[in-house]
Length: 279
Image (tube, rainbow, N blue to C red; front, side, top):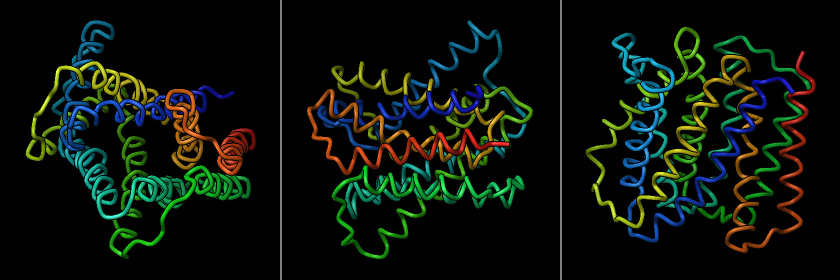
């Protein structure tokens, strides 16, 4: 397996743990924006420590601050604002489903911006993973208003933009520094909306949320984008909901239906196809 695809798969696997940590954190009465605020702050501490003591590098840079401001606004603040608002006016299942329209946007953006070729097998893989996500999502209530549909699709588009901006960022910069500066500006945008409520019991779960799906996941993904097309990386990253439902089955005893298993198989099959058929 090409190293970049392995990194995407590992990154998506860590993202699959996000719902597990969030489930425990919500039990302490922490609202969504406050959870994301502490998630980003703890990640900055972990990432900054890693860069200073292990990479022997300064995590800060004064170059391209406008780029990181845009990246932080789009990739952190806008994404979570749209996502949580969609959840509020529709449902979690509906919001999660529309997040995974991102691969379709990534294929289009990859073609328009990076001249990535839309091949036959990439199209087939895209159809497979989108259908797989619908099946994995299970019984989703589609009886929502048009504005929820708009904000949900907007979430998917912004999620795709994260990969595009990351691709630009890691071209001439260390992926860890790109992530650090992006999260730093994201934290600035999140601060006015946070209540700063931090129950002691929630701290271990917030640290886990910061380390696994954030620090580890996005560091791996940023490194992968140095080697893999944005469109292909986005398709492979749809293994995240498969990991999430398997973990929910193991940890919370949630039922896995045959339809969800079929959806998971389609997602994995599409991810394998887009890797194996790369020229």
